[in-house]
Image (cartoon, rainbow, N blue to C red; front, side):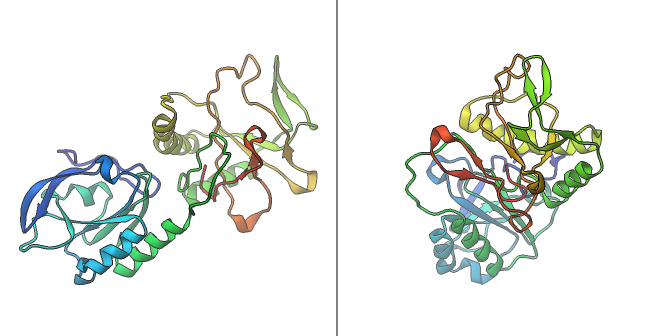
Length: 297
């Protein structure tokens, strides 16, 4: 962890920074814990900050989490007075809790992609177990024979930001059925039926930039080895069932004005119970339909 108190408070959806802290075993310091150790990559983690209840120190509890591909780490300011079977990390300066704007007891749960999935003040063993089961149950070992080069990311935008973007769209004039053409934007209802609003409000744009550059750009770099430094002015779009909303087969970078585009991001603002449809298909890569959860991209 950093030697100075963090200036940015981390929360759900943020990428978890690398953690390198003393590791305790047998009641004393035995080495260094490194969250980037490749031997444990791709596993979710539960960090229990503060003296834990005896329930979570039981081997059976850690085994249950391990069955959900989640590792359990206890984080305290000093090594435990006696040997324990739990993975025990020593954070003498309390920087871990401070990074999340909280205090012990606190549980920070990180998903398999090293993104913060939950922050639990006053946690219980049952809460942690339930989240482990939920994260593990979100995917299944299905056989995939064809897939588009797409990332599906949950927990990108929180409910408050989604609501603010929807409210902004509702209160602004709309551009209808507009697509990029060789010499500017044109209306093409046969190709696209959508009502768009460009985000021009500085404060809202700043919030949106925070999640795009803080939560999506680093993963694009990790997966595609491309550093994102700029993004176009974002647009809030709505496909209306009454008008037969759609966007037919198209590419996003086929005009002189759009040829520089490398990646496209769709951020879903509505929950599954609010609408039907809305899936994206990439026909060159099969018939699979892609639709992230609310707040996902």
